[in-house]
Length: 207
Image (cartoon, rainbow, N blue to C red; front, top):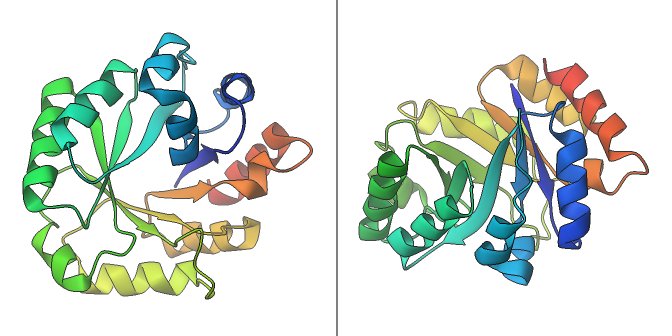
């Protein structure tokens, strides 16, 4: 299972520095939505972290203006860009076309996407489907059972990612479950005293 580390709500200087430190140890470095909104794709593109090992995911959460936003995201050197599953099928088809043209990867964020809508969008070959518990949601989130339930409902989806308060114990259970391709961890890594050491701990339990 891959580890994606979400860097968000920090300065761009700090994000770039941390990305460089994490590069050799994690699979995917994410620049979160707030970071992208705070600094913009032009600035991020100018000061790209130029990772040598990890992929860079830019969490655009595109909902409209899809092809335009994805072109700009790939221009900013993002390897993986996100689109909301609840967006229109025209938007999803548009960003998928751009993704293939630019030889990048498309991550479909399923936050607030109904099962009915998910059924309509499970055929994007090679796309990653993200089970994403809302940051603002007050109710608890059982990642392991949620992934199992999703896999049962949508067996056609081969690439699953999961986010939402993932700690070491949950990450280990997800790895043992063997369904999710990647796990996304934010505060449990970047808000610790030593984010690199924390990332290494996560890598140890998921590999």
